[in-house]
Length: 103
Image (tube, rainbow, N blue to C red):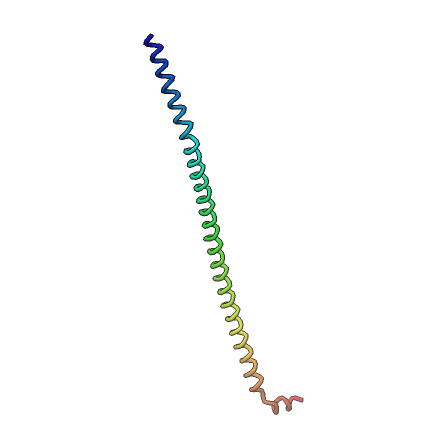
């Protein structure tokens, strides 16, 4: 008789637990899904942020390379101008009369 009372009490508690769980489970499941979605979005945002940082870094590196190339080109132009100025001075220093003597 005591065993039957305990079984009924246990069965009643199980029904209460099942009833409570059936009302709480959908809410918690929904909350869990919301948090999973938030975590997914956060991960995507972090990946996007990393990709952006990498792209910006590569962009700055390209700009630095371009600046170095421009500086090298300007230096070569300066050398070319200097060479042209030397040639001009040589041509100006030639005496046409001396050249005529060789003819």
